[in-house]
Image (cartoon, rainbow, N blue to C red; front, side):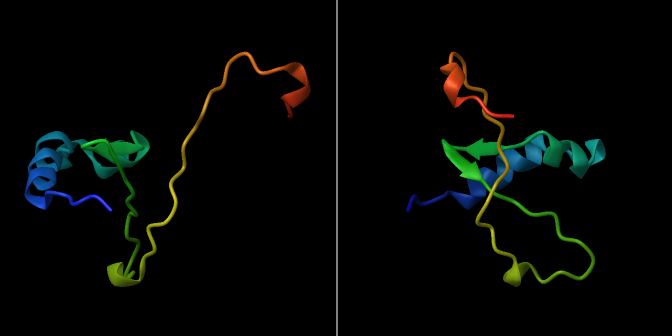
Length: 74
């Protein structure tokens, strides 16, 4: 596992993800990376306990070109 410089990421996040623009812009703009590593996040709802959240998946969209027609599905 790669070590992460949390001070560096805190500085970058503070500079790029401006609160006045809203957290929804950040969430909708993902997925995000830092130093070539995927950032996995979860927006806490209500009184969720952050210690109990499992950050083990991320939604991504992939576009593949020139697949043979037999591989395509609906």
